Image (cartoon, rainbow, N blue to C red; front, side, top):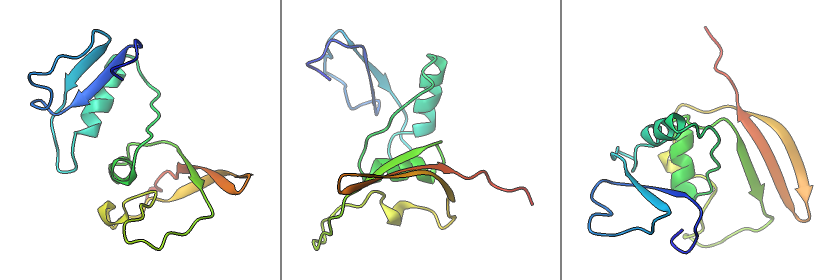
Length: 130
């Protein structure tokens, strides 16, 4: 982000960037922390106020799990590779230990084979009224 000239929003905890000067194209936006890290709902509110209504999140297991945990997603695109890891340090798509005990049901919209990989597009199912 610091080598590009495209407008860039950098969300971080209030004290993180203190004393650092960002390039002219980078806007630093302080965001409160919650128990998971940065407050994702606050970030989405800020983006919405700026008319940014589409966000693609490419992150690791912790970030993606936070979006799922807080039900702040409306689509998942996942790629699965036919590779098994025997290491204790292998990373999964989601950090399962961080997810709540309340399951999030998904509706599969597309399952496509791409070479040796599988692409899955899924949407959260709307909760049924009781």
